[in-house]
Length: 143
Image (cartoon, rainbow, N blue to C red):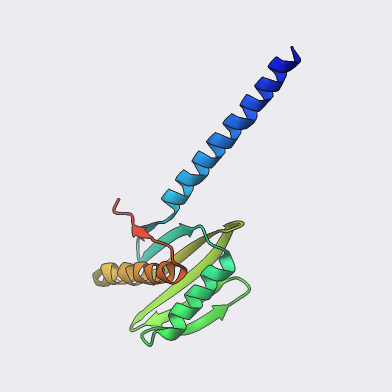
């Protein structure tokens, strides 16, 4: 009887391990897809990365400070928030910690009707540049 209990316990632990690693791997696969959305006069792009938040925020700041086309207008390192301009567009970027080693980048930008595609492209380009700096392959979700 004790042997049956030991096998049952072992089977439960093994199943838990298998299902948790499968779910985790699927989440990371989904996580690297950039979601881009239009909402009224605002465009938003987000991505979840399997990287530490301080590294992601550091890559964001590095991206914005090393590229002459971006000008930082507001920066809050404690909240990991930065606002910048590129030409006539004002863009806000926030890096949040979802778990240990898991971060989310959210980029939003207001637009007028004729510039909707332009502001979304800027948001997605910044995220893609940050992903490259981190060595993480991100793709744009075409849905």
